[in-house]
Length: 316
Image 1 (cartoon, rainbow, N blue to C red):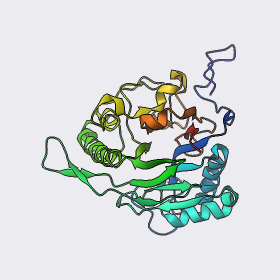
Image 2: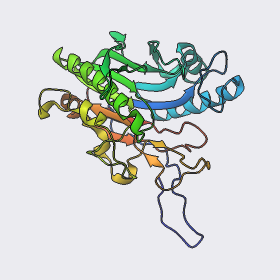
Image 3: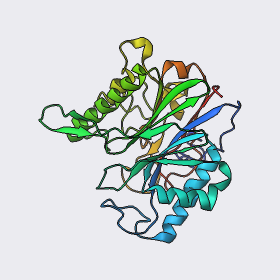
Image 4: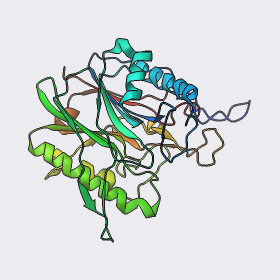
């Protein structure tokens, strides 16, 4: 993306979309994308508000924009967040992506406030899908908390047994009132990672963590108030099996995955580009990484306010 300094005509924009990515290797592409309410405009659409709520025509336009992003990245496996239901994905594929060979993998979650779910589109055979309903204790209280929006998929990448764990954690990274609940969610996911590792499976945790990685500052220098990323990455018994965040593999200027419009002015201002979407890989898989792309090729004020993240692995 363009980040040029002030020129004679005045300050350059903080962000302008870059060209579509050029993939240099013929590997397996794995991606994550928060679709910003991929809903159909019909029926009960939850208690959160969004621009195309209750409007099928606007919802279709939004769906078309999401389809364009998915076609651009052309991933073999893509984990999606903020999906209403399986039916809206069927519409998405039938309308715009029928030639890409995707199968839908969807498990109903329990976020009754937003009605959002996590889903997987895959060209590869998937052996098993599910979700964890485990809960963990919220620090400083008697409450327990779970991950309302999650999905796991067990499959093979080449000869390697792998579990993809798609997540969408509690929002507002710097809200102290949500810190302990998001850390409880991280504990739930950490436990699932350990379970899969102990079963001899490599793990990919990907999605919208709604949190920063203290070990890898994003473009705006954000630091977390939680241990969410650190806890999930260190799921195994020792540092040699820690998960790797591919955010570390791109230059600091490219480390952003979302636009948080703090002043609600419809423009991208300095400090509003953050990295809250992540792909974490087991060491076994990280050794196969050939490319990492933070695909900042659309205007986040007119489509989803998140950007796709794509890794390319040589595991076919």
